[in-house]
Length: 305
Ligand code: ATP
Image (cartoon, rainbow, N blue to C red; front, side, top):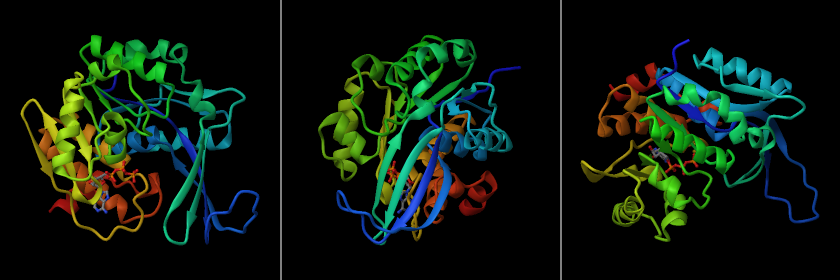
């Protein structure tokens, strides 16, 4: 089987979502409503966004040997993903996120890695050859850091472009930063990585320079409704997003990253790829949920007409 051009390595979570009027205080029991179990996990969300964009994509992930894991693997295949490196771990549940959504729209999330923690360097080892034949590798930080580092170093050595979406925010080693072709933090993650409070194009520019000084070739900082700031060898600029009525921004960043990597892979230049990614993310914020909100290519093309 030929290797896929784009490989996403990352997490799979079952999002257990419940609506509450307000969050419970410590020791308090409250009643919620509208309980749903929805497919999530940053790795899976980004892989789904890239697959629905139309990319030739493979996913490297660990999920549980439970019903949810089985259903997810099936769903990935239906979205056109190559799942040869999606591993079901015996006697482990799929990763879990407990999400409370308050009436004012705020959310509070507890994540338990479960099977995602099993994506160790030893589990990745048999798939390194597959990874080395890709053109682009896209990762996030819901997987063990040693695995993210191993994948980045091996990919880089083999000439594979490495894109890291550093979410959720965690400190990164200088060696990992130097192995990245591109890093795509949001405002909070950019601040955590650089110590610079990022709120607009000017502060994003300063933070991007700090990251490029550490050896990352290009930096793309997403700025929510303001768009995204790009800084790379060919120049730097703010690329505004699209104005839409946002109802739920869950997975906006994931949709952006998956669509962006897929668009670059397709041969679009950075500006055109960011425009496509903005369109995909803008559609996703008008819909509820994580993977349920991620658009297909035809919807993105229609949005851009
Ligand atoms: P999340 O954590 O909610 O998934 P994030 O914080 O990682 O998202 P953001 O910077 O908020 O990422 O948004 C990513 C992209 O999503 C933006 O660059 C933009 O294209 C799109 N986006 C986010 N919010 C809006 C909005 N309110 N209106 C239009 N587009 C949006």
